[in-house]
Amino acid sequence: MADQYTPQKSDKFTFGLWTVGNIGRDPFGDPVRPPLDPVRSVHKLAELGAWGVNFHDNDLVPFDATPQERDRIVRDFKRALDEAGLVMPMATTNLFTHPIFKDGAFTSSDAAVRAFALQKTMRAIDLGAELGATTYVFWGGREGTETEAYRDARDAIKYFREALNFLCAYVKDQGYGLRFALEPKPNEPRGDLYLATVGHALHFITTLDDPEMVGVNPEFAHETMAGLNFVHGVAQAMEANKLFHIDLNDQQPGRYDQDFRFASENPKRAFFLVKLLEDAGYDGPRHYDAKAYRTEDEDGVWAFARGCMRSYLILKEKARRFNQDAEIQGLLAELRQRDESYDGPRAAGGYSRDGAEALKGRAFDVPSLAGRGRRYEELDQLVMDLLLGAR
Image (cartoon, rainbow, N blue to C red; front, side, top):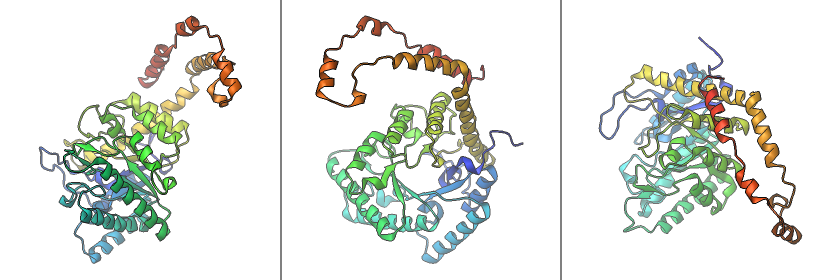
């Protein structure tokens, strides 16, 4: 039965073919689910209320498909999108599964492999553009190392930059209108990956020939793996106008990339993420890069997909209530009034010599300022009351 937490197309929820299509294989166990036909995935996701579906090139077209097979598969997929009323806003390239990428793709030490990675990516960009994608994500799953004994990391970053500059120029030459989004990750499957965090990626973008064309696609699990605060990473990307796409899932810190159902491990952190996205007016896809537990059959896969979307909508409603709760907002207003009561020189007005001299000569009541309580315990418990249904 539909309720207020039933997803609608306007929610812009998207899933990758590789997410619902995950067959449950892991390094210690064989697959537990048969592969899903992409056409079935499209129709089922539409039935559940999703807005769109995304893919790596080889999620749809096998690596060794002939041109004729490729055209037939794409034709059937386009028909399914039209029938289901789904869009395909993002595409990406698989540059990590095939053995040719064992030492990287764009950053491989082998110049021929780097060239092949460009060829494969251009063809995948053509496919994405054909199906309507407006964002193209680069996750460097093999762009890393286990040892520094051969490749100088400075060379790897140079190779990565050359590839991005080349592909930006290719997209502009083709008139596709795509934007690129870099997806950071600290490790796995390589021992250490380049562009490990949102901060690494944001700096790298500033070194490109066309930095306006490139943003980030942060993933909840990837920052959390490194023990970082994902909400802060997303906020930094937003503040830089570089949040081009986002991957939602959940993760325990310090573990392998678990890709759990959204908000299933840390609903409090997920709440603050949803609140940030909604308060900021983020209008892009809410994309789920997650997978069902290996314990599940196909019915469990669809329960997983429903759960991802439902949890987001529940937390969206909690964020709305946070913003309308009289006690919470009253406490926030009280704190903000006190925090902004200072009327002296500050950095916000910009630098001037007179301002600097005035600030240097300003007398502050240090003991009074140091003694002020922040009331964060009280405020945080109000958040917990809200999340746990006690208010």
